Length: 414
Ligand code: PMT
Image (tube, rainbow, N blue to C red; front, side, top):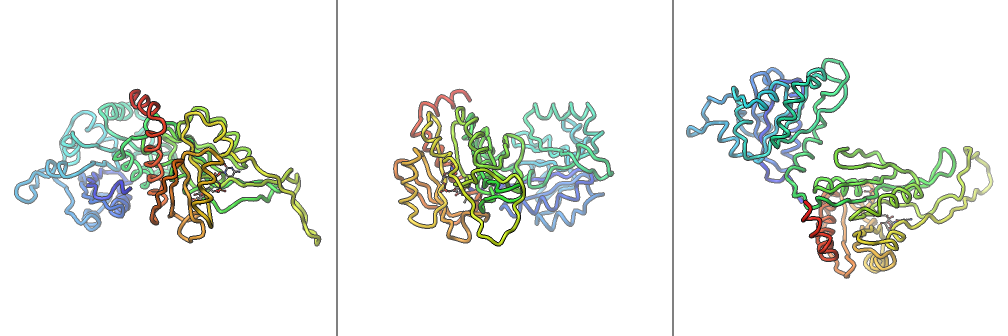
């Protein structure tokens, strides 16, 4: 699912030091298939060259509300009619104040006023003492109440060398937020419990048993579910990944037993449960309390079975839609159908982990979805992000089929 392909993005840049980051933001949007145009305030031009923006967008930069463009078009009217969204980044305290008070005395404030029918996203960036000023806070509250979107700022070192809340958020978060804004909230009012990553089973204080799972597939599902309006609880084994805090409760665990405990805790009130984690099937019976010393003798490690979390969830299933994963190297359909039966699943996502571009660690996957009615759908190579949306599309369809009463009741409440 290409959330951003073909979208028309108008980026208005105001006069803050973070303006130097915006060319990279434009590149990210262009790479995602968007058409981008830029507008600047006079002060923004002190931080960034319009020529850079023109080169990256392939469009003239809008600089002045009184300069007519071709065939007497008025820039702020033509540009806001053209765009699907207006992003103000960085948004200074000054532009937030103008927007909240209905002042339109330059090109960017006029663009904001003229964008009354389309979404506007503000990404504030300023010194933290300015950001924490009650007047700025009030202006932001007014703009939020009016229905405008906000992202950030975040904490960190600022241009002046001080630490505090006021930095422009990561550019990837701005892109993610825009995707969010354009996504239909078809998981609204659903709690989605997702497991991701590997588990680590300790041998001694410095060694453990684990597997190659990076967590990318599970995290992609968590982000997609959140974007689609779900309340997401992500139970994650050890990974190097980060995830937006807004709308996702992240619970980090290490071992299969810890994962089991957390999943049981949140299972009863979840609507959809997706086990994407690669849970270790075995653990040492009792980890050694001290670091093991080398010896020349053969070393034998006794392993015991970990609980099969998914199987026991299947046994306790009430109204949840239960989705398992299968990392297979052979007999894909036969093994997957057996798992659906053994674990009382509604859907299984099969990855062929023989292939270098699918399964563990990589950013792409080749999945096959098999539902509990035996219906099979194979997908070509795609990003894990797109695979996540394909899985959620199928879950929503299945939920309507299996639990129509539940689905309608939830929609009535929205
Ligand atoms: O994390 P990435 O690098 O992005 O890689 C993604 C992935 C390959 C790990 C993921 O797509 C995947 O296939 N996850 C499941 C891997 C796995 O453990 O498969 P399995 O066939 O052994 O287990 C079947 C199902 O039972 C899985 O849903 C698993 O979460 C669950 N299980 C397994 C063992 C266990 N003790 N308890 C479980 O609940």
